[in-house]
Image 1 (spheres, helix red, strand yellow):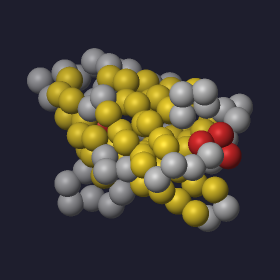
Image 2: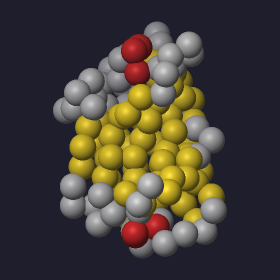
Image 3: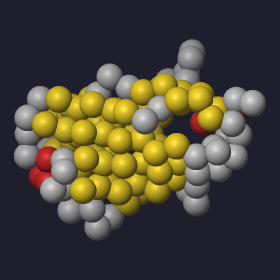
Image 4: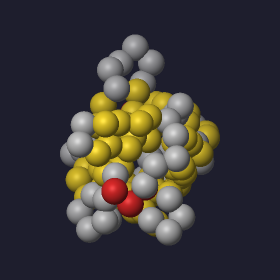
Length: 115
Protein backbone atom coordinates (compact mmCIF):
# COMPACT_ATOMS: atom_id res chain seq x y z
CA UNK A 1 0.00 0.00 0.00
CA UNK A 2 1.25 3.43 -0.93
CA UNK A 3 -0.23 6.87 -0.43
CA UNK A 4 2.04 9.57 -1.83
CA UNK A 5 1.44 13.29 -1.63
CA UNK A 6 3.03 15.86 -3.92
CA UNK A 7 2.64 19.46 -4.98
CA UNK A 8 3.61 21.29 -1.83
CA UNK A 9 5.96 24.24 -1.79
CA UNK A 10 6.43 27.88 -0.95
CA UNK A 11 3.78 30.33 -2.11
CA UNK A 12 2.97 33.94 -1.37
CA UNK A 13 -0.23 34.90 0.46
CA UNK A 14 -3.11 34.92 -1.99
CA UNK A 15 -1.44 32.35 -4.19
CA UNK A 16 -2.50 28.87 -5.17
CA UNK A 17 -1.20 25.33 -5.02
CA UNK A 18 -2.60 22.01 -6.14
CA UNK A 19 -1.73 19.01 -4.01
CA UNK A 20 -1.97 15.52 -5.44
CA UNK A 21 -2.27 12.22 -3.65
CA UNK A 22 -1.53 9.07 -5.62
CA UNK A 23 -2.57 5.73 -4.15
CA UNK A 24 -1.73 2.14 -4.95
CA UNK A 25 -1.97 -1.28 -3.41
CA UNK A 26 -5.68 -1.16 -2.61
CA UNK A 27 -8.97 -0.65 -4.42
CA UNK A 28 -8.91 3.12 -4.51
CA UNK A 29 -12.49 3.56 -5.66
CA UNK A 30 -13.74 1.85 -2.48
CA UNK A 31 -12.07 4.32 -0.14
CA UNK A 32 -13.05 7.71 1.10
CA UNK A 33 -10.16 10.12 0.82
CA UNK A 34 -9.32 13.08 2.98
CA UNK A 35 -6.64 15.66 3.73
CA UNK A 36 -5.36 16.72 7.10
CA UNK A 37 -2.77 19.28 8.02
CA UNK A 38 -0.40 19.73 10.92
CA UNK A 39 1.44 22.91 11.78
CA UNK A 40 4.54 22.86 14.02
CA UNK A 41 3.55 22.31 17.64
CA UNK A 42 -0.09 21.79 16.73
CA UNK A 43 -2.34 18.77 16.45
CA UNK A 44 -3.18 17.29 13.10
CA UNK A 45 -6.53 18.64 11.94
CA UNK A 46 -9.09 17.85 9.29
CA UNK A 47 -9.07 19.85 6.05
CA UNK A 48 -11.36 18.15 3.55
CA UNK A 49 -12.87 14.79 2.59
CA UNK A 50 -14.43 13.22 -0.46
CA UNK A 51 -16.57 10.12 -0.77
CA UNK A 52 -15.39 7.03 -2.61
CA UNK A 53 -17.48 7.89 -5.67
CA UNK A 54 -16.54 11.55 -5.54
CA UNK A 55 -20.14 12.70 -5.23
CA UNK A 56 -19.86 14.17 -1.77
CA UNK A 57 -17.32 16.50 -0.20
CA UNK A 58 -16.85 18.06 3.20
CA UNK A 59 -14.57 20.92 4.24
CA UNK A 60 -13.30 22.49 7.39
CA UNK A 61 -14.82 25.92 7.93
CA UNK A 62 -11.40 27.52 7.64
CA UNK A 63 -10.98 26.41 4.01
CA UNK A 64 -14.54 26.56 2.66
CA UNK A 65 -14.69 28.62 -0.50
CA UNK A 66 -10.90 28.49 -0.94
CA UNK A 67 -10.06 24.77 -1.25
CA UNK A 68 -11.61 22.24 -3.62
CA UNK A 69 -11.15 18.50 -3.30
CA UNK A 70 -11.66 16.18 -6.28
CA UNK A 71 -10.68 12.68 -7.29
CA UNK A 72 -10.01 10.68 -10.42
CA UNK A 73 -10.69 7.04 -9.71
CA UNK A 74 -9.26 6.03 -13.09
CA UNK A 75 -5.92 7.49 -11.99
CA UNK A 76 -6.14 6.52 -8.31
CA UNK A 77 -5.50 10.13 -7.43
CA UNK A 78 -7.11 12.90 -5.40
CA UNK A 79 -6.42 16.58 -5.87
CA UNK A 80 -6.66 19.42 -3.39
CA UNK A 81 -6.85 22.77 -5.16
CA UNK A 82 -5.85 25.46 -2.69
CA UNK A 83 -6.62 29.06 -3.62
CA UNK A 84 -6.24 32.34 -1.79
CA UNK A 85 -3.71 30.78 0.55
CA UNK A 86 -3.06 32.41 3.88
CA UNK A 87 -0.04 32.25 6.19
CA UNK A 88 -2.13 30.23 8.63
CA UNK A 89 -2.45 27.51 6.01
CA UNK A 90 1.25 26.75 6.50
CA UNK A 91 1.53 23.12 7.55
CA UNK A 92 2.42 19.64 6.45
CA UNK A 93 -0.52 18.26 4.49
CA UNK A 94 -1.32 14.56 4.77
CA UNK A 95 -3.51 12.42 2.59
CA UNK A 96 -5.61 9.67 4.15
CA UNK A 97 -7.51 6.76 2.66
CA UNK A 98 -10.20 5.23 4.84
CA UNK A 99 -12.74 2.41 4.59
CA UNK A 100 -14.62 0.78 7.42
CA UNK A 101 -12.18 2.05 10.00
CA UNK A 102 -9.06 0.96 8.11
CA UNK A 103 -6.89 3.96 7.25
CA UNK A 104 -3.74 4.52 5.25
CA UNK A 105 -1.71 7.72 5.56
CA UNK A 106 0.87 9.32 3.35
CA UNK A 107 4.10 10.90 4.52
CA UNK A 108 2.94 14.45 3.93
CA UNK A 109 3.93 17.40 1.81
CA UNK A 110 4.99 20.79 3.18
CA UNK A 111 3.00 23.89 2.30
CA UNK A 112 4.49 27.21 3.30
CA UNK A 113 2.62 30.45 2.74
CA UNK A 114 4.89 33.43 3.23
CA UNK A 115 5.92 36.64 1.58
